[in-house]
Image 1 (cartoon, rainbow, N blue to C red):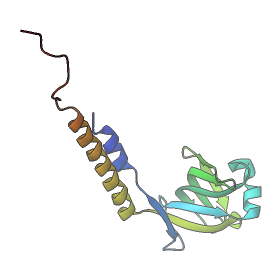
Image 2 (tube, rainbow, N blue to C red):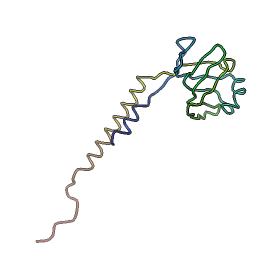
Image 3 (cartoon, one colour):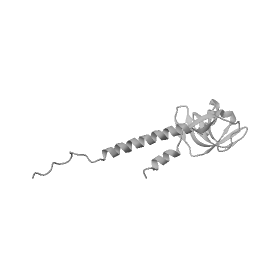
Image 4 (cartoon, rainbow, N blue to C red):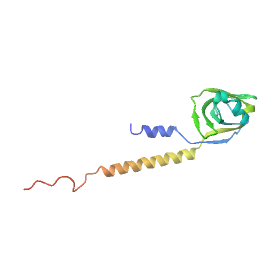
Length: 143
């Protein structure tokens, strides 16, 4: 049970947005789509007001649309909302840029190393505090 939080952390990772390596990404690719100002206005009835980007997994791409299973959206205010994979179809005319979301192995390894070091430090400190102390407790009874 001690290692459950650690194991959960390993399932997470740091992602970075990189330019698409191909003009037509394959379904399943994680994408970050930046919307145009007009696209944000046009899609407000589906996404909510003031959305500037949509993150999700590509379901289907055509010459005129991208269908995404949405994982999150970002607003102009800086707020982010997490979604549960709802499907949203974005017209290409509403899209300013498309980037691929890739796992950054070195950043993920750096965070994992920092967490492991923190756990080790806490474990070491806890082990040091649990040793029996001398000189503590009540005095011995008189003889």
